[in-house]
Image (tube, rainbow, N blue to C red; front, side):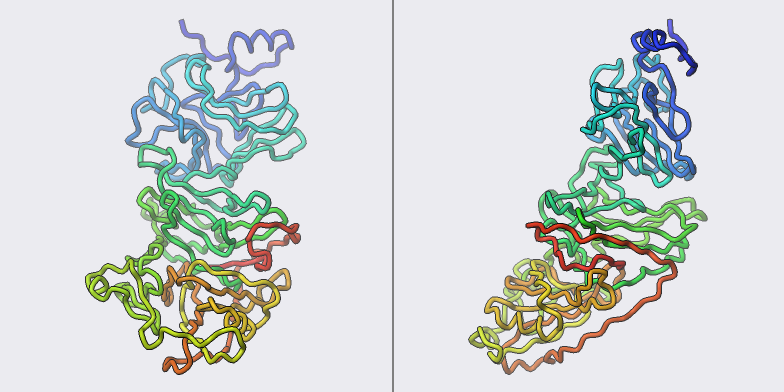
Length: 507
């Protein structure tokens, strides 16, 4: 015999104890919250106060029948689009998974509950029968009486009675990056959250591809294929810019890098009235920007990275670069270099990269200010990886060039003027390279990649255009102001670019 679920009514303390023993899931949630004693069952949802997001049990398309997950999805669009999954590694078993309704009694169905422990309150997802704990927030803060609320931003937050955030889903992303989320690095631990792809369309378990801030330096974002770097953003220059307006969906994207005392992170916002907009890491190895097209009632891909055939990391080898200014992107050698294997290069195999031309092999004896070497300007470049960020002693392009010239191993430098964009008072960003130049690109007008001038060290007598050390910055007017104030962070051993400007907005 099945018992119907009793309504939530005031009862005495003794009755509460009895009901807890007999019916552990005795109360359904209401509105946008879960409170102690309430549980969420398959077929039930909680909806954010503004109606933008819903949280509940779901079964992905093409998933194994009977398997469900607890997730968050957009509530106001007809295509269920999940932005976060709690138990992505461990699905629960539901009798009628495809219908979204449980055919079993509440006592034998899986549930998400807010459970009071001896020292804290945690969200606990239990499998059918109230047995195996599949997932929990596992907070360490003491205290009971917490509440879990789904915010209209899509963030599911566990709060203490005094309003302190004990846990939030935004700190544990899956494959999707939505407005107000952040991806970055913590200075103390040198780690941070990553966006990780689904394994497949019907399997939200962690896939191969992930996206996050470079743990070696906070100046760029990386995409990994397993542990191998697959794609790299441009290095941030600190200039304030605003992204393009996407007329198809009426969306303007504002992306910012925020440096606080404890962390540095990337976040993004959209203009007021914009449709749902998200970044997603796909199982096919794409980092995509998508926006909901209300007219077509479908997701529109606004941008996708890697964007060209030679855009994946290191496609053109050492001292080669991907020329994205051509109709068909292709690999080229940096000026003064030639293919290391002309036969392979002609056959479309670029992995061995380029070598310095024979007559250009020897740079002048180094160590002085006037060693005879010069620098060749290569504008409109996404600068190579493996750079070294010099400290605050460098305040001009000439000083950055001099630092490179004094180092016998330095092969190139790049300089950015931060006077118009630094909230900390830094005036310059000087990058130098002391190893092979890898993953350079000529980018032209590609959105999402910041172009700057790479100054390549060449021997005296090189016939190319020599650097004139002229630098320009361009102020931009924002249609909507994004302002972040941060405190200086404590000293740290992390190579996280402490002289990086506190505020950036970039494309």
